[in-house]
Length: 302
Image (spheres, one colour):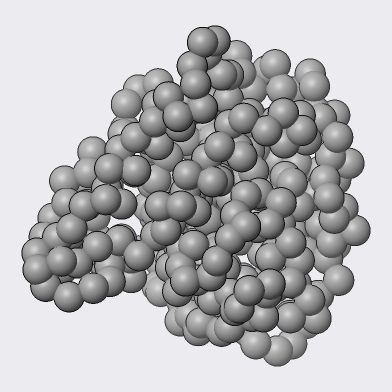
Protein backbone atom coordinates (compact mmCIF):
# COMPACT_ATOMS: atom_id res chain seq x y z
CA UNK A 1 0.00 0.00 0.00
CA UNK A 2 1.21 3.52 -0.79
CA UNK A 3 2.46 5.39 2.26
CA UNK A 4 0.39 8.43 3.34
CA UNK A 5 1.75 11.89 2.59
CA UNK A 6 1.27 14.51 5.30
CA UNK A 7 -1.17 17.32 4.62
CA UNK A 8 -1.38 20.81 6.04
CA UNK A 9 -4.50 22.96 5.90
CA UNK A 10 -4.14 26.67 5.16
CA UNK A 11 -6.63 29.54 4.93
CA UNK A 12 -6.94 31.42 1.65
CA UNK A 13 -8.84 34.74 1.47
CA UNK A 14 -11.87 34.66 -0.84
CA UNK A 15 -15.06 36.71 -1.14
CA UNK A 16 -16.95 36.45 2.14
CA UNK A 17 -14.17 34.95 4.26
CA UNK A 18 -11.48 32.29 3.95
CA UNK A 19 -11.31 29.01 2.09
CA UNK A 20 -9.65 26.02 3.78
CA UNK A 21 -7.12 24.39 1.45
CA UNK A 22 -5.35 21.09 1.98
CA UNK A 23 -1.73 21.13 0.77
CA UNK A 24 0.32 18.03 0.04
CA UNK A 25 3.87 17.93 -1.25
CA UNK A 26 6.89 20.23 -0.99
CA UNK A 27 6.21 23.77 0.24
CA UNK A 28 9.20 25.08 -1.69
CA UNK A 29 11.39 24.05 -4.58
CA UNK A 30 10.80 23.69 -8.26
CA UNK A 31 7.86 21.27 -8.34
CA UNK A 32 4.68 21.61 -10.40
CA UNK A 33 1.50 22.79 -8.72
CA UNK A 34 -1.73 20.88 -9.31
CA UNK A 35 -5.13 22.18 -8.21
CA UNK A 36 -7.55 19.40 -7.16
CA UNK A 37 -11.30 20.06 -6.88
CA UNK A 38 -13.53 17.61 -4.98
CA UNK A 39 -17.13 16.49 -5.47
CA UNK A 40 -20.43 17.93 -4.36
CA UNK A 41 -20.51 16.64 -0.74
CA UNK A 42 -16.83 15.80 -0.32
CA UNK A 43 -13.76 17.59 1.07
CA UNK A 44 -10.05 17.91 0.36
CA UNK A 45 -9.51 14.52 2.01
CA UNK A 46 -11.11 12.78 -0.97
CA UNK A 47 -7.70 13.43 -2.61
CA UNK A 48 -5.56 11.91 0.18
CA UNK A 49 -4.90 8.61 -1.59
CA UNK A 50 -4.17 10.36 -4.89
CA UNK A 51 -1.69 12.60 -3.06
CA UNK A 52 -0.04 9.51 -1.58
CA UNK A 53 0.20 7.93 -5.03
CA UNK A 54 1.86 11.09 -6.37
CA UNK A 55 4.42 10.79 -3.60
CA UNK A 56 5.46 14.43 -3.36
CA UNK A 57 6.16 14.79 -7.10
CA UNK A 58 3.80 17.78 -7.20
CA UNK A 59 2.44 20.33 -4.78
CA UNK A 60 -1.23 19.36 -4.61
CA UNK A 61 -3.62 22.13 -3.56
CA UNK A 62 -7.04 20.75 -2.66
CA UNK A 63 -9.59 23.26 -1.34
CA UNK A 64 -12.63 22.49 0.75
CA UNK A 65 -15.16 24.09 -1.56
CA UNK A 66 -17.41 26.86 -0.27
CA UNK A 67 -20.06 25.19 1.91
CA UNK A 68 -18.01 22.04 2.60
CA UNK A 69 -15.42 20.84 5.08
CA UNK A 70 -13.69 23.62 6.99
CA UNK A 71 -15.10 26.06 4.41
CA UNK A 72 -18.67 25.12 5.36
CA UNK A 73 -19.41 28.46 7.03
CA UNK A 74 -18.54 30.48 3.94
CA UNK A 75 -21.71 32.11 2.59
CA UNK A 76 -23.02 32.00 -0.95
CA UNK A 77 -23.37 32.72 -3.71
CA UNK A 78 -22.67 29.12 -4.60
CA UNK A 79 -22.54 27.68 -8.11
CA UNK A 80 -19.81 26.59 -10.47
CA UNK A 81 -18.76 30.10 -11.45
CA UNK A 82 -18.38 31.10 -7.80
CA UNK A 83 -16.25 28.02 -7.13
CA UNK A 84 -14.15 28.78 -10.23
CA UNK A 85 -13.42 32.27 -8.89
CA UNK A 86 -12.44 30.73 -5.56
CA UNK A 87 -10.05 28.38 -7.37
CA UNK A 88 -8.38 31.34 -9.07
CA UNK A 89 -7.95 32.90 -5.61
CA UNK A 90 -6.16 29.72 -4.49
CA UNK A 91 -3.72 29.99 -7.40
CA UNK A 92 -3.20 33.68 -6.59
CA UNK A 93 -2.43 32.77 -2.96
CA UNK A 94 0.07 30.16 -4.13
CA UNK A 95 1.73 32.64 -6.49
CA UNK A 96 1.01 30.37 -9.45
CA UNK A 97 0.15 31.84 -12.83
CA UNK A 98 -1.34 28.61 -14.22
CA UNK A 99 -1.64 24.97 -13.22
CA UNK A 100 -2.99 21.59 -14.17
CA UNK A 101 -6.50 21.34 -12.69
CA UNK A 102 -8.03 17.99 -11.76
CA UNK A 103 -11.64 17.64 -10.70
CA UNK A 104 -13.67 14.70 -9.45
CA UNK A 105 -17.45 14.50 -9.89
CA UNK A 106 -18.84 18.05 -9.48
CA UNK A 107 -15.25 19.22 -9.16
CA UNK A 108 -14.76 18.26 -12.80
CA UNK A 109 -17.53 20.68 -13.77
CA UNK A 110 -15.85 23.39 -11.69
CA UNK A 111 -12.58 22.65 -13.49
CA UNK A 112 -14.35 22.95 -16.83
CA UNK A 113 -15.94 26.28 -15.98
CA UNK A 114 -12.58 27.52 -14.72
CA UNK A 115 -10.94 26.48 -17.99
CA UNK A 116 -13.61 28.27 -19.99
CA UNK A 117 -13.69 31.45 -17.90
CA UNK A 118 -9.99 31.69 -17.00
CA UNK A 119 -8.09 29.77 -19.71
CA UNK A 120 -4.87 31.65 -18.94
CA UNK A 121 -4.86 30.10 -15.43
CA UNK A 122 -5.41 26.49 -16.57
CA UNK A 123 -2.71 24.47 -18.38
CA UNK A 124 -4.69 21.27 -18.76
CA UNK A 125 -7.77 19.68 -17.19
CA UNK A 126 -8.13 16.13 -15.88
CA UNK A 127 -11.79 15.21 -15.31
CA UNK A 128 -12.41 12.21 -13.06
CA UNK A 129 -15.88 10.68 -13.43
CA UNK A 130 -17.44 14.07 -13.98
CA UNK A 131 -17.49 17.13 -16.18
CA UNK A 132 -19.71 15.87 -19.01
CA UNK A 133 -23.28 17.21 -18.93
CA UNK A 134 -25.74 14.41 -18.23
CA UNK A 135 -28.95 14.00 -20.24
CA UNK A 136 -31.92 15.75 -18.63
CA UNK A 137 -35.15 13.69 -18.83
CA UNK A 138 -38.05 15.63 -20.32
CA UNK A 139 -40.90 16.68 -18.07
CA UNK A 140 -39.00 16.86 -14.78
CA UNK A 141 -39.11 20.01 -12.64
CA UNK A 142 -35.89 21.39 -11.22
CA UNK A 143 -36.71 19.94 -7.79
CA UNK A 144 -37.50 16.53 -9.28
CA UNK A 145 -34.29 16.55 -11.29
CA UNK A 146 -32.16 17.48 -8.28
CA UNK A 147 -33.86 14.82 -6.17
CA UNK A 148 -33.26 12.18 -8.82
CA UNK A 149 -29.54 12.97 -8.97
CA UNK A 150 -28.62 13.74 -5.35
CA UNK A 151 -31.53 12.31 -3.37
CA UNK A 152 -29.46 9.99 -1.13
CA UNK A 153 -26.90 12.71 -0.40
CA UNK A 154 -29.65 15.22 0.33
CA UNK A 155 -31.23 12.79 2.80
CA UNK A 156 -27.92 12.23 4.59
CA UNK A 157 -27.37 15.95 5.09
CA UNK A 158 -30.66 16.12 7.00
CA UNK A 159 -29.78 13.22 9.32
CA UNK A 160 -28.25 13.29 12.79
CA UNK A 161 -26.08 10.60 14.37
CA UNK A 162 -25.74 9.63 18.02
CA UNK A 163 -22.00 9.03 17.88
CA UNK A 164 -18.96 9.19 15.67
CA UNK A 165 -19.01 5.41 15.37
CA UNK A 166 -22.62 5.50 14.15
CA UNK A 167 -21.59 7.83 11.35
CA UNK A 168 -18.66 5.61 10.48
CA UNK A 169 -21.01 2.62 10.39
CA UNK A 170 -23.35 4.51 8.05
CA UNK A 171 -20.52 4.98 5.58
CA UNK A 172 -18.95 1.58 6.19
CA UNK A 173 -22.20 0.06 4.94
CA UNK A 174 -22.35 2.30 1.87
CA UNK A 175 -22.36 0.01 -1.19
CA UNK A 176 -19.66 2.04 -2.92
CA UNK A 177 -17.26 2.07 0.03
CA UNK A 178 -17.81 -1.14 2.00
CA UNK A 179 -15.19 -3.16 0.12
CA UNK A 180 -12.64 -0.32 0.08
CA UNK A 181 -12.92 0.77 3.70
CA UNK A 182 -9.61 1.71 5.34
CA UNK A 183 -7.88 4.41 7.40
CA UNK A 184 -8.02 7.03 4.64
CA UNK A 185 -11.77 6.67 4.14
CA UNK A 186 -12.35 6.67 7.88
CA UNK A 187 -10.38 9.92 8.20
CA UNK A 188 -12.43 11.39 5.34
CA UNK A 189 -15.67 10.43 7.11
CA UNK A 190 -14.50 11.72 10.51
CA UNK A 191 -13.53 15.07 8.99
CA UNK A 192 -17.07 15.53 7.69
CA UNK A 193 -18.68 15.15 11.12
CA UNK A 194 -19.51 18.11 13.41
CA UNK A 195 -21.66 18.70 16.49
CA UNK A 196 -21.99 16.83 19.76
CA UNK A 197 -23.61 13.60 20.87
CA UNK A 198 -26.34 12.66 20.33
CA UNK A 199 -26.75 15.06 17.40
CA UNK A 200 -23.68 14.76 15.20
CA UNK A 201 -24.26 15.76 11.57
CA UNK A 202 -22.43 16.30 8.31
CA UNK A 203 -20.82 19.71 8.08
CA UNK A 204 -21.78 20.06 4.39
CA UNK A 205 -24.20 22.92 3.72
CA UNK A 206 -27.43 21.67 2.18
CA UNK A 207 -28.00 25.11 0.64
CA UNK A 208 -24.64 24.84 -1.12
CA UNK A 209 -25.43 21.37 -2.45
CA UNK A 210 -28.85 22.39 -3.73
CA UNK A 211 -27.51 25.55 -5.35
CA UNK A 212 -24.64 23.74 -7.03
CA UNK A 213 -26.91 20.91 -8.20
CA UNK A 214 -29.34 23.26 -9.91
CA UNK A 215 -26.44 25.11 -11.49
CA UNK A 216 -24.83 21.94 -12.81
CA UNK A 217 -28.02 20.35 -14.11
CA UNK A 218 -30.06 23.28 -15.41
CA UNK A 219 -27.87 26.23 -16.45
CA UNK A 220 -27.68 25.88 -20.23
CA UNK A 221 -24.53 28.01 -20.62
CA UNK A 222 -22.73 25.72 -18.20
CA UNK A 223 -24.04 22.63 -19.95
CA UNK A 224 -22.45 23.80 -23.18
CA UNK A 225 -19.20 25.13 -21.68
CA UNK A 226 -17.32 21.98 -22.60
CA UNK A 227 -17.58 22.75 -26.30
CA UNK A 228 -15.98 26.17 -25.79
CA UNK A 229 -12.93 25.13 -23.75
CA UNK A 230 -9.64 25.65 -25.57
CA UNK A 231 -7.22 23.91 -23.18
CA UNK A 232 -6.65 20.12 -23.34
CA UNK A 233 -9.10 18.00 -21.33
CA UNK A 234 -8.60 14.35 -20.38
CA UNK A 235 -11.40 12.24 -18.95
CA UNK A 236 -10.91 9.22 -16.67
CA UNK A 237 -14.05 7.25 -15.87
CA UNK A 238 -15.12 4.84 -13.14
CA UNK A 239 -16.30 1.43 -14.28
CA UNK A 240 -19.33 1.45 -11.97
CA UNK A 241 -21.85 3.98 -10.65
CA UNK A 242 -22.39 5.99 -7.47
CA UNK A 243 -23.82 3.05 -5.52
CA UNK A 244 -21.45 0.54 -7.11
CA UNK A 245 -24.15 -0.43 -9.60
CA UNK A 246 -22.96 -1.87 -12.93
CA UNK A 247 -24.18 1.12 -14.93
CA UNK A 248 -21.56 3.92 -14.87
CA UNK A 249 -22.39 7.60 -14.76
CA UNK A 250 -20.58 8.13 -18.06
CA UNK A 251 -21.22 5.24 -20.47
CA UNK A 252 -19.41 4.90 -23.77
CA UNK A 253 -22.27 6.32 -25.85
CA UNK A 254 -22.47 9.54 -23.82
CA UNK A 255 -18.71 10.00 -23.97
CA UNK A 256 -18.68 9.38 -27.72
CA UNK A 257 -21.30 12.08 -28.22
CA UNK A 258 -19.27 14.61 -26.28
CA UNK A 259 -16.05 13.72 -28.05
CA UNK A 260 -17.72 15.01 -31.20
CA UNK A 261 -18.78 18.29 -29.54
CA UNK A 262 -15.74 19.13 -27.41
CA UNK A 263 -12.68 19.64 -29.63
CA UNK A 264 -10.06 19.37 -26.86
CA UNK A 265 -11.59 16.38 -25.03
CA UNK A 266 -9.72 13.04 -24.91
CA UNK A 267 -11.17 9.93 -23.28
CA UNK A 268 -8.62 8.05 -21.18
CA UNK A 269 -11.11 5.22 -20.75
CA UNK A 270 -12.41 3.33 -17.75
CA UNK A 271 -10.44 2.69 -14.56
CA UNK A 272 -11.18 -1.01 -13.93
CA UNK A 273 -12.84 -2.18 -10.71
CA UNK A 274 -13.74 1.30 -9.48
CA UNK A 275 -16.98 3.10 -8.76
CA UNK A 276 -17.72 6.82 -8.50
CA UNK A 277 -16.13 6.99 -5.02
CA UNK A 278 -13.30 4.50 -5.25
CA UNK A 279 -11.91 5.97 -8.46
CA UNK A 280 -10.09 8.34 -6.08
CA UNK A 281 -10.50 6.52 -2.75
CA UNK A 282 -8.90 3.15 -3.40
CA UNK A 283 -5.29 2.20 -3.94
CA UNK A 284 -5.69 1.17 -7.58
CA UNK A 285 -8.12 4.00 -8.43
CA UNK A 286 -5.86 6.62 -6.87
CA UNK A 287 -2.86 5.19 -8.72
CA UNK A 288 -4.67 5.50 -12.04
CA UNK A 289 -5.75 9.07 -11.34
CA UNK A 290 -2.25 9.96 -10.17
CA UNK A 291 -0.93 8.56 -13.45
CA UNK A 292 -3.29 10.78 -15.42
CA UNK A 293 -2.21 13.81 -13.38
CA UNK A 294 1.46 12.92 -13.83
CA UNK A 295 0.98 12.67 -17.59
CA UNK A 296 -0.91 15.99 -17.72
CA UNK A 297 1.90 17.72 -15.82
CA UNK A 298 4.49 16.26 -18.19
CA UNK A 299 2.52 17.39 -21.24
CA UNK A 300 2.05 20.87 -19.74
CA UNK A 301 5.80 21.22 -19.32
CA UNK A 302 6.61 20.37 -22.96
